[in-house]
Picture (cartoon, rainbow, N blue to C red):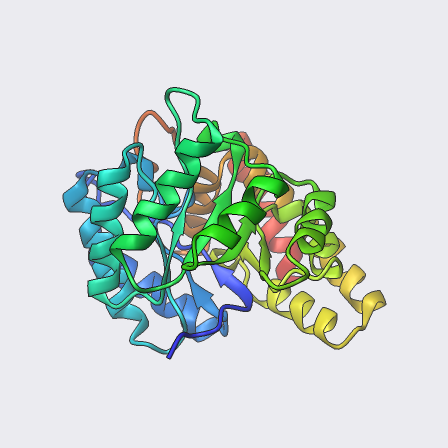
Length: 294
C-alpha cells in the first residue's frame, strides 16, 4: 500500500566523522530523534543532506542507513537526484529495494535542459521503479526552473509522478499548479520562509530541515492550520521565522550542523567546499535557539 505523505517532512543532515567519512551511527541517532519528535515523514539525501557532495558508495550508505533507522514508522522519501539520468535511475532502484516509500527527483543541469529532456528524464526514472515520485522544483540549486505548465504536463504524462515539491518561494505558482491539475496533485512547500502562506494555499505538507533544531514549532504550525486556527498559526510562524530565515540564508547543511552542535549533537562539519559556520554567526544562531526555548 502506498503511504501518504502529509504534514511535516523532515530533512536530516548527513553527519560526517572528524575524518570526513559518513557517520552512520550519528545518522541513525538523528533519524531516531526526528521520528521521536513526531514528524510525519523523513526525507534523506536532499539539499540538506549534502547529496551532491557524496560518492555513490556514501550515497548508498546514507539511503540504506536512514531507511533502516526509520523502521517503517513514518514514510520515507529519498532524494535520488543526479546530473545523469542513468545514475538517477541507479539511485532510484537502490532506494526502492532498500524500502523507500517514494523518491524525490530534482533535475540537475550543466547544459540547459529543454522541456523534452526534462520530461524524458522523469519518464525514464519512472519506468525503472514502481514507487511514487515527488517532482522537485528548485531552480536556485539545480539550474532548472520548471513552470507550473510543464509540471502539470509531467504529472499528466508520467503516472508515477504523484507529488510536487515547490521551492521557488512563489506561492502563486502553487495556486497555478492547483488550477492546472484540478487540485488532483498534492503539492509541498519547500521554501521555509513561505511555510504559512503555502499551507494557507493548500499545501499538503512542508518539507523542511528545521526539525533538526526544533520540531515542536513546525508541528504546532501544521496542526494549527489543520484546525483552521489562523491567529495561532500566524503566532507560531512568526515565532520561528528568525530560525527559518537564518538557516536558509546561511545554507542549510552549514547552519543546521552548527545548530545541532549547539544542541549537543555532533553531526560533524559540512563537506568542502562548504565551510563551518563562523563564530559571529554561531553566536547569533545560539541566541535564536535560546529564544525558541524560552
